[in-house]
Length: 85
Image (cartoon, rainbow, N blue to C red; front, top):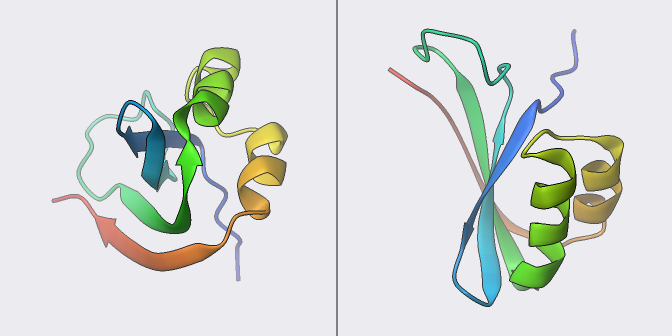
């Protein structure tokens, strides 16, 4: 079985906190977007937006080992996986 690795991460945040993050498993330049696999993580404790903005600015929404370490320490409340149609 092959492991899927996220290619990009997008955040749903207010001005102060990130409540959920969407991990995208296709390359950002893959077109069409039909059949893309996405995983939404709802966080147990909201993440301060200042912390997530640092990684957005540093890595331009690409998922790197920095994000793997950062998000790997957070507690997941719920997970929703879907493909686009």
